[in-house]
Length: 215
Image (cartoon, rainbow, N blue to C red; front, side):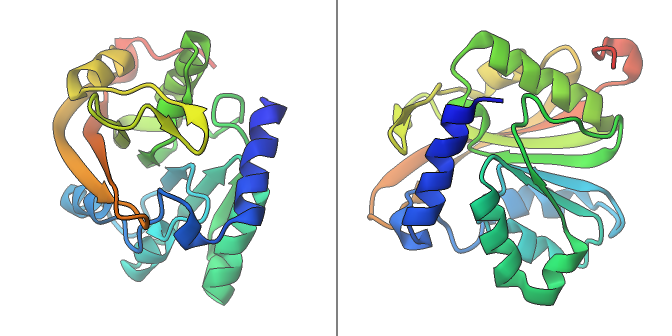
């Protein structure tokens, strides 16, 4: 686990309120459009990678999903989300940890969601660990909705460099274990009245025979 990165995000979430972070959005509308379109049953296991303080968990609970996990490097961010939800947060699985290192149940999740974690992984090894984790944890024929900064998006976020992606670049990075079913661009208006351009891709997990990494 990258302890320096852990400390960076802990300091961010302890020092800044929601409106002081560029990624804040009262509802992740674009993510929700993709998720709503999947028609998943209420009991489908869902994982929000880098969920932190995001309100996606609130909206998933409002849609009556019952098996939601939220993972983030920052324990402080998870604690703030849990406090915001009150008793409703007791039904959520909160997972503090690094997605490139954490152990997740195999072939478990019907949906893997990530808005703005993958683009922070600059090194090829970290990217591959992430892709391998997704390939192991998502059910065969399960879904992944992943958003990164687009090729014309910001070059840095929260003081850190990012990689920027087109849809075809993301699809290639997650092949051969995932196939791309759709993609869109999204313009996020930050609390500072600036625009951040995102690439969203909808990926589907190929069958195990397609070459998932061994456990």
